[in-house]
Amino acid sequence: MRIESKTLEQIVKYGAVGVLNTFLTLFVIFLCKSVMGVNEYASNALGYTVGFVNSFFFNKKWVFRSKGGYVGEGVKFCIGFLVCYCAQLAVVWAINQSWFGDTEHDILGVFTISGYGVATLLGNVVYTACNFAYNKFVTFTKQTSNN
Image (cartoon, rainbow, N blue to C red; front, side, top):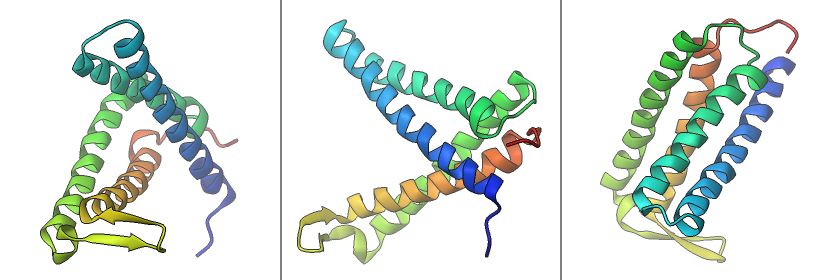
């Protein structure tokens, strides 16, 4: 199976946006809670909100170079988040309900991870792949051809 260069470029950019969002989210949480003294739950919500909004704009303008409207794509982006989050949650739940979820696992003799940790990592892979595909084929369908 061959991935066309435009899609490969989008995957790399999507990953970069994900890393940026992670750092931005953590920075906002730290800034709000530790520097400004905001309640930890409000800080968490603010951090994730900033990361979510940042994700929308970077994916729209840089990753997929979409020319669609902000409102319509914003609604689709929110729906995509919920759909992909539910897929991720189903994977985590299914693994935790299996024999695999109740045990700890040695990783190359270097560290041990719980079944829940493995489930969370696999769920994150599912979320990321589903969210990329959803955004590429549903949310940001009005892409410019010069990606």
